[in-house]
Image (tube, rainbow, N blue to C red):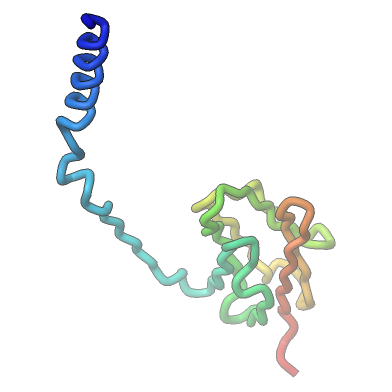
Amino acid sequence: MRFRWLIVAAVFALVATACSSGPSSDGLRPPTTTTTTEPPPEGVIVVIINNGAFRPSNLDVDLDETPIVRWLHDDTADREYVVEARNGEFMSPPLNNGDSFEFDFSTLEPGIYRYFSFLGLTRVPGTVDTRPEQ
């Protein structure tokens, strides 16, 4: 009989302890976040890397107006990207979320430059066309 009372008392103590305090009102409020989006500097085109894709993936670049392309890693998943030109004209360091890489296309002859990044075994393509409009 004593053993039953001991078990009942232990269960009661456990339930009372577990239910005695709830989360504070601070824990129930959603966190506040502020996102500041600044426009890129003049002469820079930004390509966002998000959800395993380049946005936009195909660019027409006017070398007199916007010769610099900046790739900005803004993926929600914890992934690392390396942006690389198909023919070796440029290659970024590994980009983690929030990192960016810039390349000045005015250092190259006008043309079509294909680039890519790997997402696992999938090759994610993109194109920069710096040829003058015809």
